Length: 123
Image 1 (tube, rainbow, N blue to C red):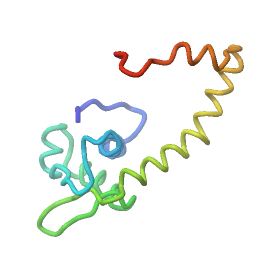
Image 2 (image 1 turned 180 degrees about the horizontal axis):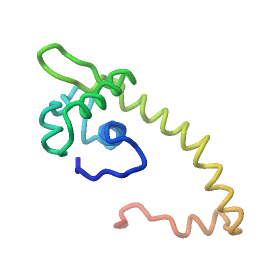
Image 3 (image 1 turned 60 degrees about the horizontal axis):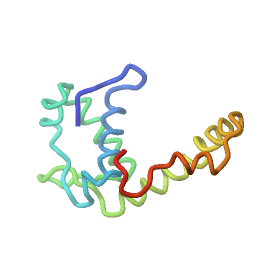
Image 4 (image 1 turned 45 degrees about the vertical axis):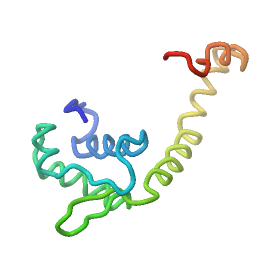
């Protein structure tokens, strides 16, 4: 994770989103430990309380669990849960706007598929 922050959200929320992205892309697997609050704070140059708050949100979202004396671990089923939520969000929130823009531009399915990368193509 990189220490790049924006001004549109609190840092703890951005850190939470970085962990979620790591779970979704598979770089943080189910059953694996999260880096300690202290190491995250040092590596990302943030306050440990901020890192702790991000981790607490992940616990409340039932994506990670705290194991006494061992740290935080990604819960089994976390990736599937996240994928389900992300798919629903995309289809309900993002896709209608994208579809509207496609229609505004008069693009056809053929236009879009012609621009889609082919399997094995470098992106």
